[in-house]
Length: 443
Image (cartoon, rainbow, N blue to C red):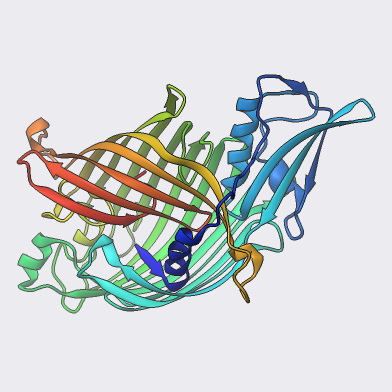
């Protein structure tokens, strides 16, 4: 979780919204219209094809309110615009769909305070520098320096349009971290808790098929150094693991608004082979994450998720085990015991209902700051949820009794395109309650 000074300022500014601030954000109505052409206005930096490639409509198609809303959300999902409007109009007996956009601020040197693994006892701090929408092609450059708990630095670059005509993309990441051991088993084996040094490099090339399918091939190298050698804490026969990685991932994504979906399906499948027998390291990591979002009774929406992580092979080091209680958590056990194993399972279901539907918050009266930093899409969503999760080691059986289960209610504050804040009250099977403050959508 990251709480930057600028986000804190923007959150406080919500309460100063002026009266009468309304928003007619997109085409609405019961009628349909055949679109003869599409034009884009307001894209001072962004190339037109970045927007057009997200649309599921083209000239000759019939536009209605539902289709217009879905395509507007897909443009918002690029996360580089403050405002998007779809405005159909007629000229010379032709129907034109005009897409009006307001570009967001693209350069972010942001000091931050970070809660590692969503834990208030693991505070780090530093600066994050992001250059979004680089060259107007939705490329993203980012550098992060973090001090405090698990100090680290990283650099990443993502280009979704390496070759627009062939729908090719490219990504790379370099990072260094001094990370604290997560495994209770490793701590008992070592005799105390300990830190490991991790240098990671990754390169990925992929192709987008149509609107909704992405396939990526990944390769990389990991350098993991432990103060002392212990079998299982290390994957090799030395206190330094030098691990080559080859992997492939697939994404199927039909969600409307990626940041907080109401409709669509998201599927992520990933398989990595680590070591390849080099340095006596040879194991695999697989991930499956399926999510579905559906609207019911107009404003009520439902979503559910099933996720599975598997590790197996000659010797899986504890630093690559599957964990619950860190980045993946069961609400109701959010602040509880940690669980580890070769495999992890997690499931969630949630109902959402808007207390305050999407509105526009423009704070243009604030001096000095750029206008692109003073316009936000705001909503408040009430939610009911249930989570469950478990871990197991290879060869162990698993039953319903192995799962930790929690449920509860909460409120999400959307301040897009910048942040989502969640305030939740959760219960577990024993009736124990806990309060949760977190950033981002639950899933």
